[in-house]
Each structure stands twice: as C-alpha cells, then as structure tokens.
Length: 171
Image (cartoon, rainbow, N blue to C red; front, side, top):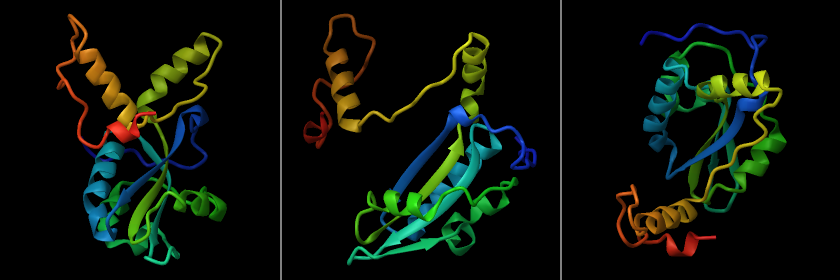
C-alpha cells in the first residue's frame, strides 16, 4: 500500500471528475471513522482530496466552519500527503450548510474521483467526455432493487419488501 505520491496543485486535475460530497454525522467526534476511510481512499489513489471543510450547526442553526487542523477526529487526514485547500468558497460552504441538520456536524469534501480516470480518458479518446454524475436517493434505488429482486430470474438477492423507512423516500 504505502504513501501516495506527493502532488502539487499545478498537477493535472481531471476537472470532469471533481465532485462535492457532504457527510453528515451526529457530532465532530463521529468523524474519526470517516477520516480513516478517506485516508484509505487517498492511499489507494481512488480519490484526490482537493479541499475539505467541517461545519458544526448548533441547535439554533448557527454554523461554525472548521478547517482540517481544527478537527481532532479528522487527524488521519493530516498524514495523507499532498496539498489541498482553498478551493471551497464561503458561498459554497454556506449553501452546503443548508443540508446540515441543527445540532449536528458535517464534513464537506471536494475530491477528484481518480478511480474514474480510465473512463474519462476513454471518453476523451472517443471524442467525448464525462458530462455529469449524480447520487441516486437511497429510497429510489432501494425500491428498484426490491422490484428487480421480485422479477422472475432476477440476480438480485434482496428482500421482498423495501427496508423500513424507505417508502417515504421513493421519488
């Protein structure tokens, strides 16, 4: 496994593969496992962290923005190598903070999906490019998998009913 190679912000970043992810947790201490998982993804060169910010929203809805060095539970990310930060604007953070529930915390990650570089290179070689990506709501995919599992000859080994709480999420 080993350490990832050091990189410089002037290295080529495949801008077709940059995504913004918000991970919500009950509190800052809950980010320790998230930090370890992200560090592993960097070590595996599956992602490249471009920027990371943590937001804590109090019960009144006021937000506090914390940088990586201010969050002890994200300590594993301090040792992944590379240079990152300064790409998320205060407007980006404020817009994303709207998704954070009062009394909780969230980590906002801007990352290059390095795992998809072969796909991007192939698309460019064919005269195209990766145009977009989107997360499918949990309830929608859960229902689709359940429906597929109920079809004769389905390869999906899922229960006959959707998981509890997904019925309201189905769009």
